[in-house]
Amino acid sequence: MPDSPDLGKQALNKAAEIGLSSQLDEVENLNVDIKTDPLKLMQGEVDAVTVEGDGLVMQKDLRMEEMDIELSDVAINPLNVAFGKIELTKPTTGNAYIVLTEADINRAFNSKYIRSKLQSQKINVNGQDLTIAPQNVEFCLPSADKVALNAEILLQETGETQQVAFSAVPRVSANGQTVVLENVEYGEDEEISPEFTKALIEQTSEILNLSNFDLEGMSLQVKQLEVEAGKLTLQAEAYVEKIPSV
Image 1 (spheres, helix red, strand yellow):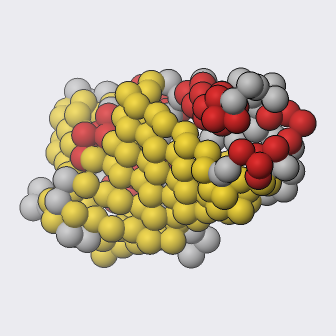
Image 2 (image 1 turned 180 degrees about the vertical axis):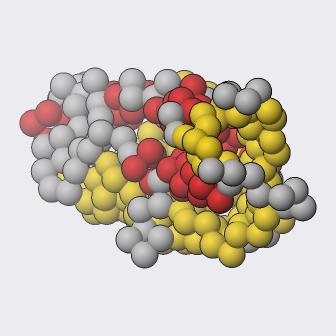
């Protein structure tokens, strides 16, 4: 064991922070805090583990304004504590809190990944299959319980540009894995293609799929969704088999 038990705990905190950061494309701020006393730590018992992160960018260019995870009743292998490693001896569950802003979701919509997925689809317009190229997708959280989307679409074969706009009410799916859009209302412009609107709705759900937020050894299940103007908050249950560390 390190000379000071507090230093041992600090080493574990740092190892977990580095391990989690290695799975993220960008990190503005990330803190891991292992709450326990020195005697319990030597026996592999941990009262709680909290993870607090700001400005975390995951795969597919999905950014989280804030992510907080709190785990309790955590058991770790005491033999690895001396080496600064956190090895769970059994899976544990806890609570997760994730905040996404309008800007975060827009960033994902205009990422290469989502653009390429939309461009790989053909839609039927007046009996003709056309390739679509999103020029600009603007996602908004205008008020409580509503999302809105405006998109400018280039039809590649004709060179024509079309506008698509709709609003919808987001709901947590039955399995808690994603967010689905219900009660879709279309904008004033005539729909160019129900197929394209369906594709945009599917991509919105894909961006908000909780598996996008999973880290190695961790998975999330949404329990509650809250929409405010400019901000979307997800409360989830975290199932953790492993806490990444160096």
